[in-house]
Length: 294
Image (cartoon, rainbow, N blue to C red; front, top):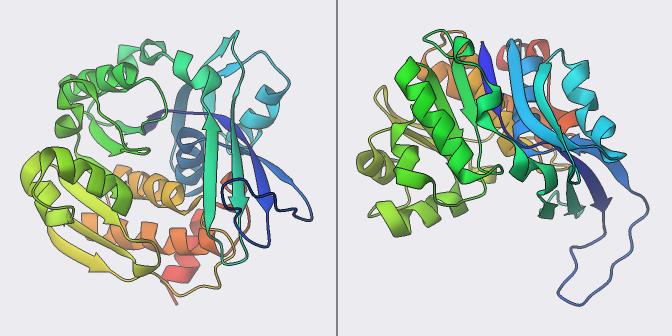
């Protein structure tokens, strides 16, 4: 089982002919409104890959909430630990150019009110994979890492966006997933270099560094791995990192060896890049299986 504590947003996605410069207005043809948030995206990716998922987070009592929860519900995820707060539901504005590049602005809203103690101790144990990101309050994420470590859970942390965790809690996880920017941020504080080997040596945990169109590198107890990205016609890269992390967690939760889990997540992220949107672009397990078999 996967227990995911993380953010829930409603995404406003603007396909544009180019990404605007500061002070510039660029008009696009339409707007795509879709559920998002790194936590929710990763939970949906894991559930579509076949995992049983329990989710904890928070939304507001506003018109955005039901839309933000729609695909979590449709994916069969247990939402009984999602809290309702008086603040606004989290919201992201995402601009995407024809090459699939993007920039994102996020209003955290209710995500900062999410509390990890909504997850009871009975959910945490050796059969549980805890999946975390860095879009909720850092002290809440760190507190759940400590509880999960004491309970013997597997812990997968996507340190996105980059930011400090109390007492260096990232050292207490099993798998740390970062992109190049997040790896560089970590390197300035905890390691002599931003590659996976340097971060693994400094932190003592399995580290995966995603490299966008160049694939990924990982350094772990199981060895060092370097995988190229799958060639796809890129439409939108917005949800690719979340897809990768959710599918990686799902594969590890099923008992897949680390290298096999990396390969599966890498293929799923490639499929995600070939589709427009965020949560809605996550592939199903059979789609990933079919692509792996090619």
